[in-house]
Image (cartoon, rainbow, N blue to C red; front, side, top):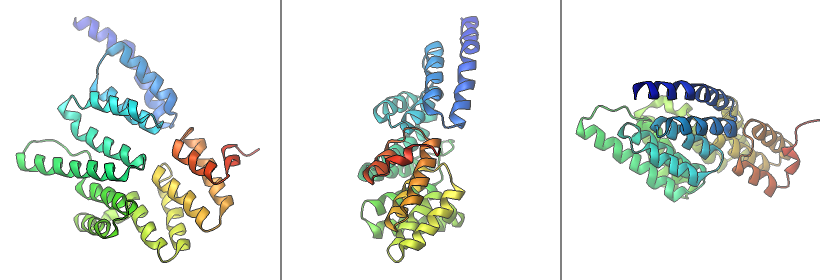
Length: 250
């Protein structure tokens, strides 16, 4: 039996290695195919299921991602990471009420771990979770609670003001007084976090709001080239008549 397990790991290793390479390049479909082949050889592996869930969420395959996360969550060592990933997925989908509930459950799990004295690393710091909550509450129309969570996050970790969730929350606050100032902040944020979907979406929308359609088209085209098939960016571009931004420069 040990020999069989060894052979299975040996056979699966090239697919896992190749999948990781594709994942780094944000070639999600190819990475998922590699991990599926590895799963076919190895059977259930919580880490593999978790990786597949993350990739399926990137591809907009949310039902499949939920199934993969549920499989990974069967292992208690992955439960914290799964809870964070599920909350992030609801946020990605723009399901703000569900995302708020999910992030609050993450905080409750943190409190439970703290009280129990169990030795388990958190998948995310409390300050980071609060920033996510602030962003979701703001998007859900609850500015007062958003500001409370945002300020509490800064108290817990002053450096978190430079985090991408903080940039998104601050950009929405700035937009109330000056959309141009919000646009400049999002531009800087996009340069700092070029792979963050939330900032990319906000920047494209803000560019449209301030009349910079060419910039919105360029940002959208660049994002689609790095994240092929991103459903949220595709819908935003198409809804604003920017289908040409899906085509590479000639």
